[in-house]
Length: 203
Ligand code: ADP
Ligand code: 5GP
Image 1 (cartoon, rainbow, N blue to C red):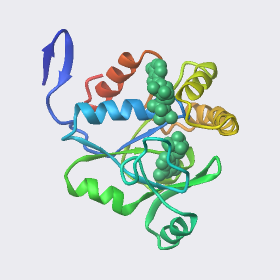
Image 2 (image 1 turned 45 degrees about the horizontal axis):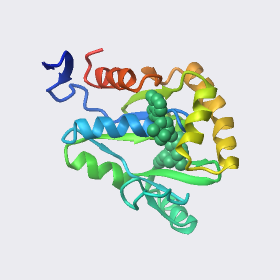
Image 3 (image 1 turned 90 degrees about the vertical axis):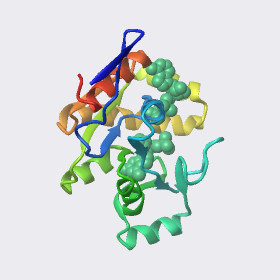
Image 4 (image 1 turned 135 degrees about the vertical axis):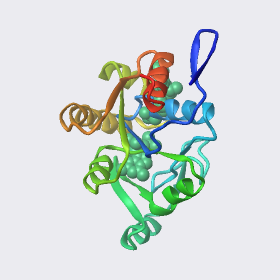
């Protein structure tokens, strides 16, 4: 069911589909913004799976909230102990989802949201992980570059690497047939409504 307030349809029930939600897309596409909005709007339904990474925290990023920020040594230990369900190298750093991070959310009866890049998506898909797959993309690469620069969190060199990677990620989304929904994040409100509609099975 939905409730109608100011002509906006707001889902009031839990999603029927309780599978983890995998959200992928090029850096700067707006994944984090959309995920945060989904979690803020439905805090008793979704929770972000906190990945491990060896990259440096950005200003404002807190350990254990955005990521578990770890050394390469700690990361390798997790990986070699089989504690990660998927893992990737992305622009010079390692990123991975731990079994523990996922279990913590499932134990609370909430729906995990995984924000992971393309090679991680391929790994979880191949392993038969039952999930829903969504890709978020910008209108074009020019917009992506503007957003990455506007965010101001990466060096020029890192922005270049992320844009280079974006081309391959966009091609992957078009050709791999992994994603149930590809959302163009142009107008944020519209993109969010599409995501929410998909997740709650309304649209
Ligand atoms: P990602 O998590 O995919 O790397 P972010 O959510 O950090 O991307 O978004 C990248 C930048 O673009 C941020 O500064 C964010 O505020 C901005 N942004 C996100 N969505 C939109 C949008 N629809 N229109 C304009 N700017 C946006
Ligand atoms: P950022 O450095 O911008 O936070 O993330 C860079 C990229 O790494 C993004 O595409 C993001 O989706 C991806 N990422 C974040 N955590 C993980 C993870 O645990 N596994 C994988 N495979 N990718 C991740």
